[in-house]
Image (cartoon, rainbow, N blue to C red):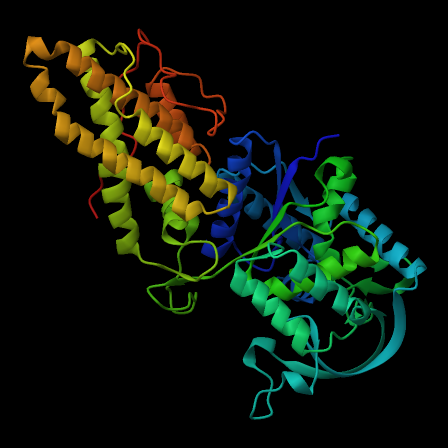
Length: 502
């Protein structure tokens, strides 16, 4: 059976509403998934929700609800959010589903039977906010625990531990032998630095039910529930297994995650899989965080970006364009409302939108909307741009890919200025030349629709509609110059990105 390209986002904690960071991660993952489809590979995209753990239990109690009802209500919001973003995900996982819990229990039991777990008493400190045990090493220079840990309590309790430490050297060697396993490079270096400079402590994989009841029970000891991260990470495997597609999907090609959960994905997860004799994912792709106006986003100060409000006001593709164009995968980014409006005006309305509109308007005005004989004046520029774009999409260089497309748009707008078809139309002796120019512009509009499929799927479809062409997925790498046939009747253009007052 052929391996499908399989990509995931991290699953989101249901202790609140989705924000810009969630939207960004889902959209870049969607662009990569769609790119694969447009490069000839079938792809499967998984996103979803992490619904267990102390924070969820606490949030439900604070809302006067039982935990499952609390999760069900929020899950509706998050699933609607995925729809709002226009995602092409093949499934949506919720960790409270039986299909997920069954696989978690299988993995746990298998590791227990192999002797990978042991029980011991823990005496020390615990952060409910981060759901993690702390040691003296976690204290600041002033002897206190960082505020990110919230209220820290002293604990004495028995738990089950996973023999993480015995795989430390194996993981170092794997990362060194597979330089693309963690990307970008600075995140790979971060993981290697951690592994080479610290002893990997064994991982507590249980919580006593008397302290935390909201979780998946350990299959070998019903007095405990599973540590939320052991449960959550398994989602990437549980869905392919549950839907009977493990052999064609696993291992995952890419896990797209935020930089704050790097250790869980690049250290804990591969070791869990290795211990279970399962293949490990091919890549952990790590993105940065967003600020608003160079400040950390905070509801209390009001400097937040509501993705749904932006989409409702400006349109989905404008939102998708801005987050991918503004922020490369890796560094942190800064959202400004002025920057958004400026990109919308200059790059979407005046750049792409105006080009399509005037190209098809001239074809309608001067040729009754009928495509003239083929001509290849811009073929070299187009082929060069396409090949560069394909290379960038294969390397997940999404921002660079958009810049390549917009460089071609700039070239086309320059071509209109150079050839001045509206002047040519006044001279009957220039009819043949006018036809050549109009073909080059119209065929370029078709290619732009092909290239924009992963990034701006709605806009791509609308351009194809205006060209009176089918909206099927087209292989970007194989779509060359000259496929628009003479005699094709195009439709009247409509504004793709209406100009807006700020």
